[in-house]
Image 1 (cartoon, rainbow, N blue to C red):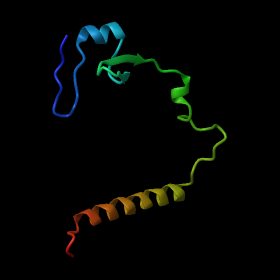
Image 2 (cartoon, rainbow, N blue to C red):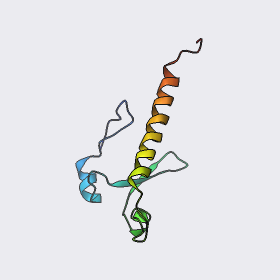
Image 3 (tube, helix red, strand yellow):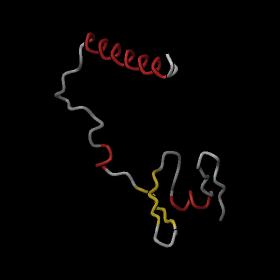
Image 4 (spheres, rainbow, N blue to C red):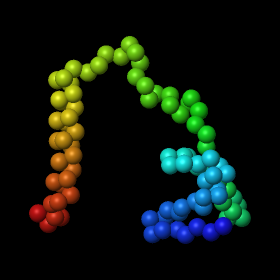
Length: 92
């Protein structure tokens, strides 16, 4: 089986491989590069450890509206300050 590498470094796995490994969009793969430049790949099956930390504690106190507003304002200040630094030419 062959696959073509795109200019972005992506490939499309042949359907036979996707079906055999049970892969669909969002599936995770683990690549191993061996000493002889052989590449092995295996499907990574999700387990409970992958979702650890995604959910908040039921005892957590939600932020106030004021805290959310300040967080948004700080993010926008940082984002726009970084963008304005990139636009300035070195000689100014």
